[in-house]
Image (cartoon, one colour):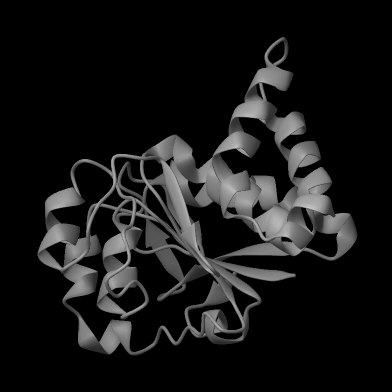
Length: 205
């Protein structure tokens, strides 16, 4: 499973790094999450400069794509040249977006009239884009998922692992990253959030 974690200038470190770190727990199963950027380097909202591991066009061929948020997402959403470089297909890809990344999904036409999740700051922008926003941390419709809140990245990662590898692998990945003394609580909470949106095959895998 090759995963593109779309990361733009002004990105939120929690979105890109938490999700990619959890997903890379399955590296021994052939999974690899790549920080995927429109330019060779991008700078986070807090001034952290990172080198992209894959160019933005990698998202077209990836098995799964996660879109994080950032302080420049509204600019990106109004940039047709940049958006044209993001070619996604929910028929063959698992696609997730977090916080203002949901706005990009809306602009790419991948949400339609389905309800979605986002953060409180981005909520009015997503509503203006014609999307109904839920007061919830996570929702998925088939192969497309959205999440709201910085730490909701764990739900996107758990959902993607459960869909691509199985529920047991999702539980194991969450157990590894959860705080000591609270592991069972964290695992149960994460799985309870994503499980209603899993196909039966993923739940029993």
